[in-house]
Length: 161
Image (cartoon, rainbow, N blue to C red; front, side, top):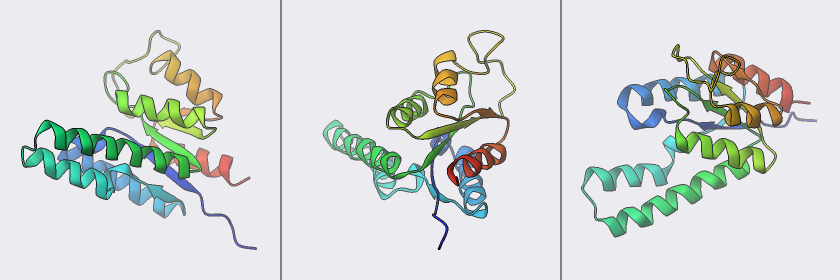
């Protein structure tokens, strides 16, 4: 009997900058190396089209249509995934990443976060990030780690049962 392929949605704001995009590619590669299938919204055809429209100075109507298509495509990827790996770096968790975490937990996905950022970001000394994000991640059966590698290990262990 063949092992089930585990697909991981990669939630992050990393694709907004060239340097972030490079790091996002490393996370995609790491996910593949661990034998999992990365579902990366930053490499979607829909996202590339939105980027092209922005670069070309498209009008509001075209951007609204593209925004709707990208948002729907991202939710389809989350619907299709087995688990979510979320980048929690920044002075606060990216709002799009937070929404993806909430949606994923709401439909029963295990969510694991990683935070490589050294800055304090939590609501108090007992949490690394926003307490609601922490609660959702923990409630899903996930945890927050200091590296994507550790987060992927958690997901592999949890989802291969």
